[in-house]
Image (tube, rainbow, N blue to C red; front, side, top):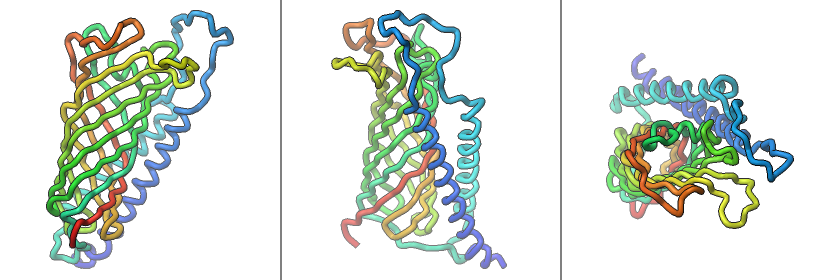
Length: 294
C-alpha cells in the first residue's frame, strides 16, 4: 500500500498542485495587468494646478478585487509548501519518479508573478508601500548548473506597480527593476519534483511617473537607486521533460535605497538616514536547460 501511494498517488497530487498553481497565477497576473493599463480620469483643464484630495486614487484594493487575488496567492503558497514538504519526505527508494540529473548545463528561467514592496526609505520620506501598491513582475535568470545540486548566475526583474496613496498627483505608475548575482541549491535533483532555494544580491531601482505624459524630455517625476542587500527565493521544479521544468516559487528581498532624484532636485542626492525595505514575490518560472555535454 505504501509503495502504491508513493508510486501513483503522490506524483498525481504533485502534478495537480503544479497545474493549479500555474492557472492561479495566470489569472492573478492577467487581472493585475488589466488594472494597470485601465484608462485613468484626466482633468478637463490641463493647466489647472492639482489640488490635494481627501479621496484616494483608484487602485487595486485588498478589500475588494484584492481579496480574490489574495486568496489565489494564499492557496498557491499553501499548495507550494504542502507539495514541497511531501517531496522532501518522499523516499527515492520507494518508487519515486526519477529523472536524469542536470549538470554542466546553461539554465534559462523566464517567468513572472505578483510583487508587493513595503518599508521605509529614509528620514521624512514616504515609505515604499505609500508610493507604490500592488505590482506585477517579470523575471529572467541565466545560470550555469555546475553540479546537479548547485548552480550560479545572474538575474533581472522588471516590475510595474499601481501608484500609492502618497505618490505625486500626476503619478499613475511605478516601474521597478532589480539585477544581480545568485546561487541556487537543488535538494532532490534526481527526482521529477525538486525543491530548491536561491540566494542573491545586487542593484535595485524605482521610478515613479506618468506613462501617458506627452513631455518629450522625461515623464519620470521621481527616481530611486539603491542596493538589493539580499534576495531569497524558495521554489519547486516539476520536470516536464529532461530539459524543461515548471517552477512555482515564493520570495523575499531586503533592499536599501541610497540616492534620490526628484523634480525638486538638480540630480541624484544621497538619502539621509537610509532604511531597509522589503519586497515579497510569488509566481511561476519556466526553466530551460541547455546541456554543454552529456
